[in-house]
Length: 190
Image 1 (cartoon, helix red, strand yellow):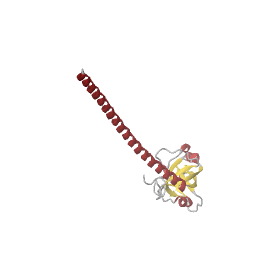
Image 2: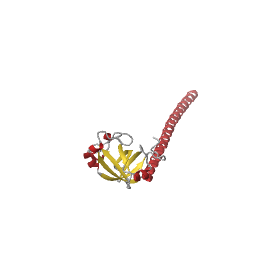
Image 3: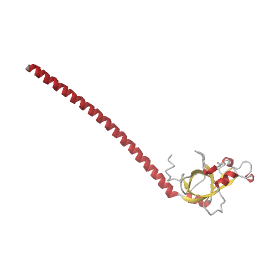
Image 4: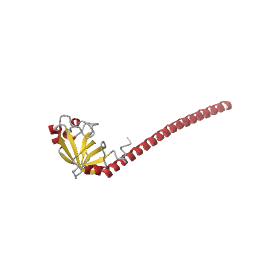
């Protein structure tokens, strides 16, 4: 009977030891999974912080570089000739009409700047300019492809439309403009 009790005690001890060992293994496995999830979360957080810092840099650039400009739409009339071109030889008949003040995605307006706007924006021909409405709801990308009259003393941006009706829809508006092509622009790195 003593031997039987000892065998039972040994078996119970073995079962308990195996259970504790198995439980410890499961705990270590779960701990490794949690550790892996923590590392993933830390990496995602670092990426998010980097993106947020970049967005803040871009926003600071936009706020620090914006200049108030008057944007006026003009229509191509017959006195421009059959195939008018901008000063960089871009066909003016391809200037984008903008109904209801919206621009098709991935399209860029061709614009002319007055000497005052050119100086305020530190712009050169073929620079990319963003026009931002006062309430920041409308943004239009523009390509500086021509110059207005050299005696213009206001900060004027002229938009040339192929269609007179679309030019009337746009009319004359006040915008903030920022030259995204400037040397210190965070948008140039893209």
